[in-house]
Length: 395
Image 1 (spheres, rainbow, N blue to C red):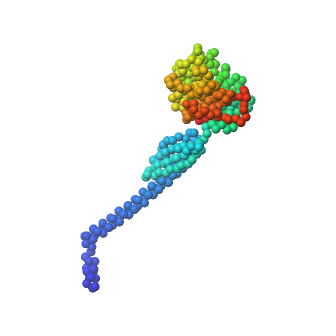
Image 2 (cartoon, rainbow, N blue to C red):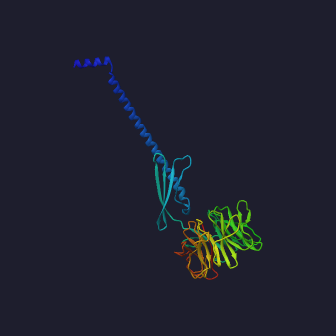
Image 3 (cartoon, rainbow, N blue to C red):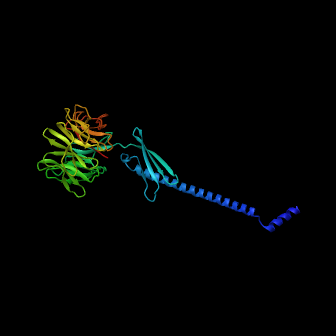
């Protein structure tokens, strides 16, 4: 025992050996590396948790904004968040569950592999439409859901109001009224009993309002130098421009989705034809080439088809045609009068009026003419001169 104690005292007096010093340094370095790794891992997990929390926050914010929007304007897609949330991206997807329900999914991804998904179910909102009817006496404007529940009267004037045209953003409605004497074009907010103001006052009256897709211009018809002509008014400058040639009747303007063309009805020696003209003015290009009555054009939302009415096969039916005049297809087959086709904003439905029930009433069908459904199913039969006409979809 005394011998071992003596050796220890000798080692203390001579100091640590080189091997022992190196080992101590390696142990210190290893401890530092381990400490740094633990700190780095802790910081990385902290950043990951921070990004995950931020992704969850952004997903909630995105979902809340979507819930405040009509489902009709919510579309699948992907996008990036603006500052101060650079580096975060969102993906929106929709899944139709049937029975009127849709699953809305929002996924947000960010730095450090952060990801967060939110899902909720929404009842698919029924599309709404406007029309003119004399159901309460004079022709007035009404709004109703596609399910045909009780229509809501939107104008309460002592005059005749007709031809409603809902603006592309759904906030305004242009219509024709004789409240100042001759029929003129008025605009009102898309709310019940909103005050209306006159947009177009023409010496011979104005009719057939049609909005450009950006909502900044309106086409209409009026008599000029003895012919029905198409004019376009810029809503900012209030400048009115005649875009037709004033040598024959041109009516029923309908904008192409890109705003570059107007589909119109041109009077001919053997009836009328559908044509397109540049929206800035120019010569018409004939689309239909069958003698008879071709009228009431409407572009599809993708601009690839024009729906119209024609009596080429006997009585007035609905047809579609390419804007270049190719591939004409008959849509309705009925012994009664079908007219005024209007595509829904998604192009999946065609709204029109028909006398197949005996009086002019509103119907909705698929664009190929299948699954025809009457919009307003009345509990009490109506008698002449009852009508529902001039249909227009809300976006």
